[in-house]
Image (cartoon, rainbow, N blue to C red; front, side, top):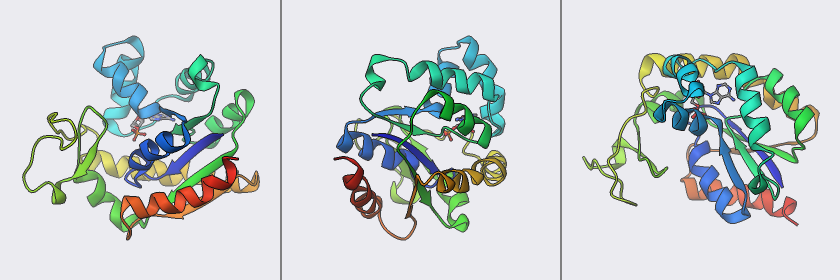
Length: 210
Ligand code: AMP
């Protein structure tokens, strides 16, 4: 099963992605994580990506598509994968159609009013866990691994505004793109806990995972 995970920044894609990857034994490919790792390691891709990620803009399509196209040729991607954060616009989706076969696109739908607070309040750990400040009670380390929590440099209000604008103008049209292909499924996130959202997701994916 090859899946695309779609949703606005702050929709909870990362949280659901690790649960989905675990349960359905899918390789989790996050383009955001790939860029962050490259930036941390000071690679050429990282140097190019930094100004874009720092300002909340999209890294150029040619670079991003090439990274994903190459990643999908690795051995570990031959038994099912989940793309998280890719495609981000119609052009990337059209390119993806040329080099991969996607079975289903899961849209995580969240009321826009919740997103700013969710993202700006987010604190993350290098292990991949993420928290909201309102639930941390002042804790500064990860409950799972003890690592130090930090705020992503692009999780600050001005950049988040650009990211949300980019989502609306460039990424949200993908909902109709995959609907037209008959591949779109949606869950609503927001009121319920991440576990409840995951339950809804499992009901959908259990049908595909046969
Ligand atoms: P994310 O972790 O998915 O929120 O991505 C963080 C940042 O990485 C984005 O704001 C973009 O600058 C960049 N990025 C991630 N995925 C893509 C993509 N598919 N196309 C272009 N830029 C991307």
